[in-house]
Image (cartoon, rainbow, N blue to C red):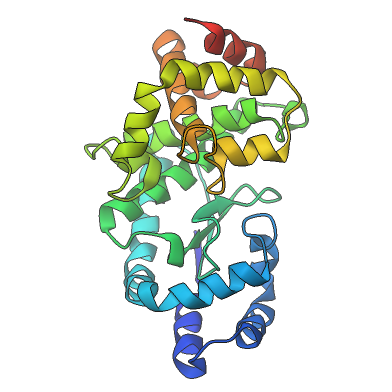
Length: 284
C-alpha cells in the first residue's frame, strides 16, 4: 500500500500565498503536475469559473481539509486491509490525497485501476463518512480484482456505456454497505448527512427512474447521459444528481439475491451483462 498525501503541501501553500489568485493556483498545479494530469480535465473541468469558485470556497473548507489530512490515511489502511482479508486479495493500492478545485470527490484512475484519488475539499470530515467513501473506492478495485481472478477478458468490456457504469457503481456501493455496515442508507450514496431527500426522491420515482434509464440506455450513450446519471454535474431529470448510483445498487442487490454474491460481482465475465440489465429495467 502506498499513500501519497499531498494535502500538507496544499495547506502550506494556502498559508503562504493568501490571498489566493488564479495565477498562484496555476503555480501550485504546475508544481504538482504529476497528480493534476489525472485530475484535469476528466474529473474536473479546468475553467476560469471553476478556478474562481475554488478560490472563493477554500476558506470555508480549510479546517475540514486539515482534519482529513490527519485522519484519512489511517482509515484507508484499515479499509484496504479489511477488503484484502475478506476477499483474500493482494490489492497493493496506491492512494493519492489531494486538494482539487471542487470537482470529483474521489475516483479510481482509468489507466491504472489500482490507483485511487481522494479530493479533500469535496469530502465530509466525519470519520464514518470517510470510511464509506474509502470503502466505495476500494470496492471498485476489489470488484475489478475479483473479475481478474476469474480470468475476465477486459478487452470485451465497454467502459464508455452507462450500463457498465450502472453495474460498477452498484457493485462499489454494495461493497461499501457490506464493509461499513450500520449507517443510515443515504450516507452510502452522498457520503455525508444531507442525502435523505435524494434517496426519498429515488424511492418515490423508482418506476419512472427505471423507465427513463432504459430509454437512455437503448439509444446511443453519450457524455450528456453519463453526466445526468453518474456525475455531480447531472440531475436535470429528477432534481438530484447521480441517481444512477441508487439504480445500480438496486440492480446489484437483485443480482446477488438471484445468484449469490460471488457470481453477481463477477457476472460480467462470460455473461451478457447489458442484456440482463435491460431486461431488469423493463420489468414492472
